[in-house]
Image (cartoon, rainbow, N blue to C red):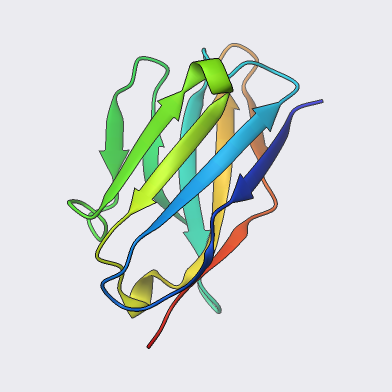
Length: 117
């Protein structure tokens, strides 16, 4: 059973930084595409950043230049470094793992990020 556990969320002032982590158990992430999504109150879940098994990355326009996604396959972990945080980044952040060979996707439980002064 594949499980994802996010951590690192919290309350931060505008302009601050946070680093989210997502640890995967039950399967190696070496051949998976990993992604971070977020959902703000009253809004749909949206993609924030993704990283392929080969390390190719993509970002939502709203976070380009501020957020960085990375992966450590040896630790079965994916990270999201968030800098220059804005109040509009406030949301629950979710980690996703997608395995193309089986067309299977898995979600974590989410971690709350609140940007406020």
